[in-house]
Length: 79
Image (cartoon, rainbow, N blue to C red; front, side, top):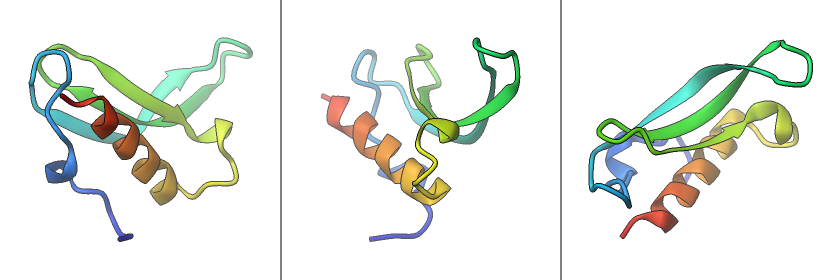
């Protein structure tokens, strides 16, 4: 294992069977203080179902590890 997670490792959406894509720099505004943060997200291009992890929530993990964890979480939900 290891290395960059490729989109072809992503299973279809568990809700609509649409294609999934990964965004490793999804920006969001934190509710607590209004600052812009980044997350690793996998989303369905058809129905917009999303699984995401904020990098700030898991500072002990590298971005590659976060991407791997998000991929595993997405694929566990797949039918």
